Length: 218
Image 1 (cartoon, rainbow, N blue to C red):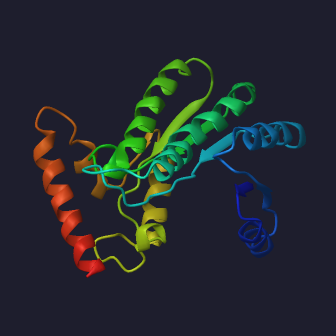
Image 2 (tube, rainbow, N blue to C red):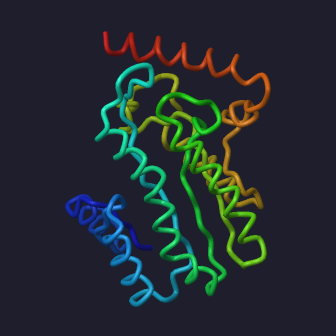
């Protein structure tokens, strides 16, 4: 198993605590970094047959007002362009290995909030890529987590978010099936939302999130 990320200290800590794991520095927002890392992986680990795209950032934005351009570009680059670029750099190798590509998106891809446009776009891309690779020997999986207690948006103590160990356990159960979309039961109503009447759920969802985050900030 090989892990990657921008922060070497974090990578070293994980590798030290888990013998057998290798670590490689990668800036998913930098196309040159992606090219260098992909070449290194193919050369030094020709047996590589699974790619897990897990990079993502989530920052509060203001879709009803002026959006900070630096934040906008950073979000789109990290959440959408980065996974696409990394997959593109490794896809031919994965074809030769009859490999698996995994994307970590979010249930917010199906219930739009200001942040989730990148996740919705990535979900659309995944559907197209899965179709195009259907005869290429490569599986394309999408993990769409519900709200999970992690450091993202300071969610460790959020009562509405599910515990991390529960998410891992249930997601692994679904990964053991033939499903292409890895969904927990709690996420399925949100996955089923898109359609002609989707605005009712979307508006209700966003109103709930506004109340939650307004009260937590207060």
